[in-house]
Length: 230
Image (cartoon, rainbow, N blue to C red; front, side, top):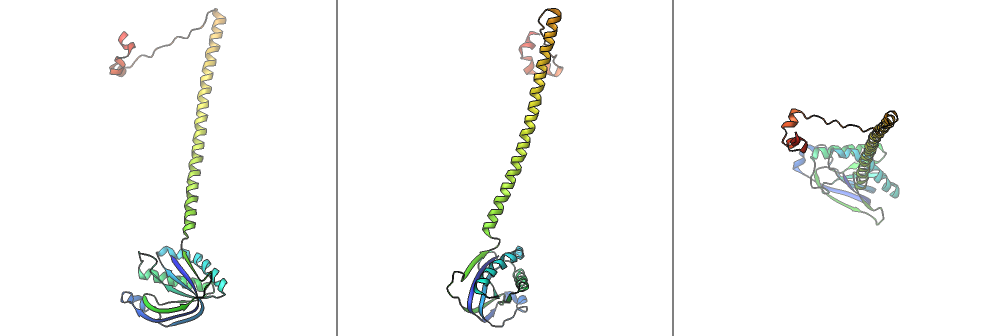
């Protein structure tokens, strides 16, 4: 949803020219002329059904101007020209009616300019720093912050997972080193005992593993020096 929110000291909606493409909606609208003083005049572009989720954010921006100009009068203008892909008229009309109801529940006096038509209008907007503001929902800055937060969360999950993996690997590695040291210690102990008993140095005999039939058939094994000696 996009909104260009004007403050008007005077606003007048004149002639309404109905569009034939919105015959079904024309029966639901009023073609009465509108004349207002000291009014907020948001030009609203609906982009999709998710826009119903942004009413609260829109009202927050509207309230800022309402407090500045000390008015609670609002005239909503349906305005399709802020987007290329225009949603179905029925959907846009339904969301605008919901928005009107929402603002009325917040104690605003709200009128909706005729939907699905061309209009004559004129307004006088005095020069002021809050004369007009452009808003987009969701706020692009909030979207970027949300993306950055999600990215940081994913990186944090990956980092914590990596730390756990490294700790696990370190633990396994320390067990292997400990096992090797224990074997070396056992060998030394065995050699010391053998020397004390016999007076000779203990030399461990290496027993060569006999190859399997499959290994004998392997061309790589048959090329080995041990195989050639046999």
